Image (cartoon, rainbow, N blue to C red; front, side, top):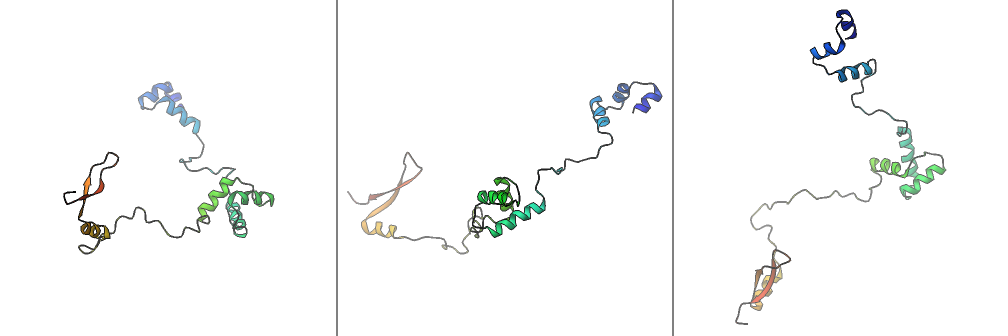
Amino acid sequence: MRRFSHRTELPVCWVLTRLDIAPAQFYRWTARYGSVNSHNGLMPRDHWLTPVEREAILAHYDTHAPEGYRRLTFMMLDADVVAVSPATVYRVLKAAGVLDRWNTKPSLKGTGFVQPLQPHEHWHIDGVGNWCARQGRVLRRRRHPQCATRYRFTSCGPN
């Protein structure tokens, strides 16, 4: 752009306005010239754990399994295995799936209601209805201020 501006003796701002490029964008491009494109990817940091450190944490946990992750952190620090925070040890152990061995059954929450395959398959019969009939009472519904419905026993006779 500057070479073109120098050859034509036109100001850079004039050429940028004709090309419909904002001057701020042009100067950002010139500042970035020669640098590598990162494409918003994760850049490795110095404080990130290496795979060797992750394996060391898991190996130390295997030999000291009944200990909690906080105690395990300071045991590793004393033994010069790895120097990391308790939160990092927790994240590594949780990602490896070693902290939730006791909970082997998956949750059924959100799986929905299993529909009955035949008519009357899902009905529940209890003794309350039979007891009410023997006592000459009817199970009626009445409105209650605290909840939408409440059941109450009322007599069928002149009581």
